Amino acid sequence: MTITERSFIISVMRIKDENKKEAIFSATVRMINEIGFVNVSMSKIAKAAGVSTSTLYTYYENKEDMFRKVYMDVKMQMHSACNRGISKDETVKQSVRKICENLLEFMQEHKDYFFFIEQSSNSPLVTPIMHKEIEVQSQETIEVFERGIQEGILKRTSPILLIGFCFYPISQLYKESCQQGMLQDIDYYLVFQMCWDAIKN
Amino acid sequence: MTITERSFIISVMRIKDENKKEAIFSATVRMINEIGFVNVSMSKIAKAAGVSTSTLYTYYENKEDMFRKVYMDVKMQMHSACNRGISKDETVKQSVRKICENLLEFMQEHKDYFFFIEQSSNSPLVTPIMHKEIEVQSQETIEVFERGIQEGILKRTSPILLIGFCFYPISQLYKESCQQGMLQDIDYYLVFQMCWDAIKN
DNA sequence: AAAAAATAATCGAACGTTCGTTTATTTAAT
DNA sequence: ATTAAATAAACGAACGTTCGATTATTTTTT
Image 1 (spheres, helix red, strand yellow):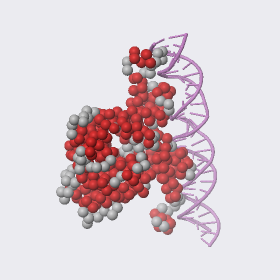
Image 2 (tube, protein in one colour):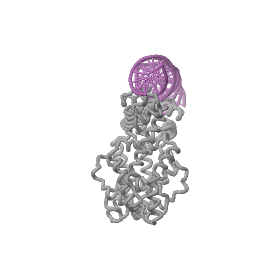
Image 3 (cartoon, chains in turn red, blue, cyan, brown):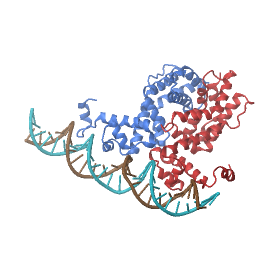
């Protein structure tokens, strides 16, 4: 959306500084990763973003709203990254492989996003409604696995279960390898092979 | 441990009220699960435990120390639960199956512990040193998988990788099933089959 | 066996600081 | 001139932690 487009919709308002919004967003992610949820506060995030504390309240209703929206934003980015380049012309195995690679690539390129998700996703901040929204977002991925079941290639069970056997091992192993600084040791070709062995018929 | 036994070890100290320690411990777990790390505080935990805030400081040095020790405690309980009943007389497959069942049983019986772990384990509170300690504790489990590799039954890779393919899918799927209230729908026999397919040669 | 002394667990109150949020005002864009 | 973004200042409440007094328990002395 360009500035002129926006001018038609909202005529005389002063527009929100997108740099500022981005600064708040990434400061939230960064601070959570650095000091954790226990020690984080609105003022610390504002300071990290180079913004007044009260400015946070022009972008978010309150603390909870802020964490929820930032979480959903990051999560959505991850899911759309996982779906990238998926086509119905390729085989299910090719698609699954691509989804796994997309996930791995996202984790590597957005390490901070990934660790933020890991730390947020189990918090009671994240409501069942949010989980539903996320599932909707990952519909494209689900369809790949559903196709695999129909074709008799994958095990006849819930697609969510199949997806779990790809996503969780990969993400957890990446996490462990980061924590122990042995990223090079993991053979991701083997990991994908193991994922596939788990879900294939 | 009887009172007389204890008298030999600790002579002059007044004995800490174990009920109180337990109350603090479980209040910590409960509060984290209910309101999350963002909203938790020493005073809230003390109130939930039915104890003065300052009493927390006779059991723990400070807030961080408290969360760390409670986390380690819970984590150790889980790992020793997973090792329960493992014998070198049984086949590797039997042992692996038992470990998986132990994990599942622990999660079901100690839902609160499990969710607390899930929420804590990705926090920067948990240091690399703590991760090392945990790995030492799970040595018995590691040995089972090492034996499987030596016997040529399991894939020739790091035992940690193999364990990951059992633990993470099971725990994540249990978590999802709780969140969506569809615990009955999951076929855990199939889940174990998928774990085994992933790791077997 | 009883009393006294010693020790640390316990707690309520208080510390200074920081919390999340609101209000009043200024700044900047139209 | 109008509108909203942006902020500084201010709010009471809550924060993590410390402290002094009290209580409960054990050891030592009678």
